[in-house]
Image: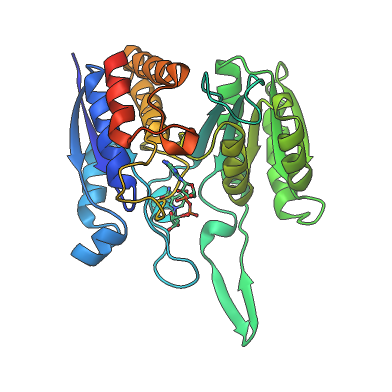
Length: 335
Ligand code: NAI
């Protein structure tokens, strides 16, 4: 059996709790993983004086694959987001977030068979961090949209749609106002769409998309969008299927991949042992599939679904009473 080396970044807040739970579950699948734990984030800054210490990049250079817990980014001033830095430095231009209903989970939309895929551009837009004060009281923030990045996210979305037999791709934009930047994004999507005639293609303005996602989420299939809309729509979509404790994610580039949940460090529940590790476990399912460990990925996904179906060992955010460990033990029993 092949041994895989994986860089493990536990992160801040609930990060170490959900990361430990996920490592236990992945190890229990029988896949042979050699974890290389490294610190990044607020704790790394406090302890080592660097947000992303050099050993993080050194490890990822060897392993090429990371599993990452959330990391703190201060609001307003303070340090830059480590996610943004990692994504840019490693060229992780695709942010893929599958939004699926888990069996047995009661949400406002539980009777709908939701299965959406979000493709968020991950390297530019307003996340370029180019901000400056023009004159006192006036601040400028630059929104960068390039043909290169827009085309490669659109291509990733359509190639996935073809591979997974998806029927429709919706591009989300605000090109009625940002005619040039979002206009360029749409132009790139249309060009890529023309090479995939079997896949239906449509466009929606982001505000209308939000309304329709809440009223008729089942009419969506695959969504592709620039960075900021992707950030907001991901959380909205997470709300449709039971919240941030559920939804996994993958940051993909040509040479590296980092798997992480959509949620943040959840400072309100950190250290209490009650965080839901499902989102990071489902990110690990994506990671196992990426490594070619399809059987282990399938077993872990199935075990998670079993625990939700049974409904006895769920965490508080999804209406249960179990601890992080209680949920994890149940998943491992089903493996
Ligand atoms: P958040 O996602 O940490 O929390 C929002 C709400 O969801 C909270 O009530 C939290 O308790 C709940 N929640 C999130 N994940 C959960 C889980 N696994 N189980 C149970 N409940 C969960 O968002 P917030 O509060 O806006 O951000 C907190 C910090 O996280 C900030 O510093 C932010 O920059 C950072 N962040 C980091 C991300 C990353 O590293 N990938 C992504 C998003 C935010």
